[in-house]
Image 1 (cartoon, rainbow, N blue to C red):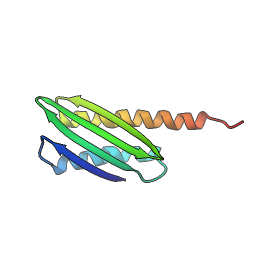
Image 2: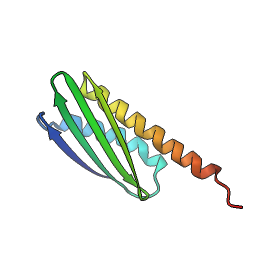
Image 3: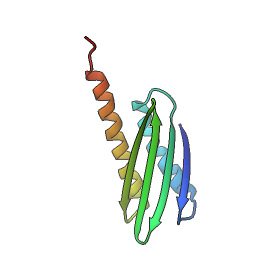
Image 4: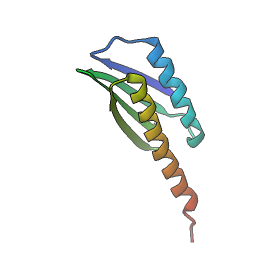
Length: 98
């Protein structure tokens, strides 16, 4: 999975990158092809914002999360993406051509 990172109002750290990549590895079980992910880290006052955009199978999945801790924001954003991917995969499974 190709992952690009953008840091706004925060210094780039390898710890955030590795934590995000390990969380995004969980999503591979829902994906067929290698995909592209773009992660934006942003800090506004006391809020840590994470925006994850995932391009997979021709569909774009987006999740935004905000909390007081960056790692919590990452975990919640990836959980939201996982719910979206699971819902899409279940929809494909239930679809039966007639």
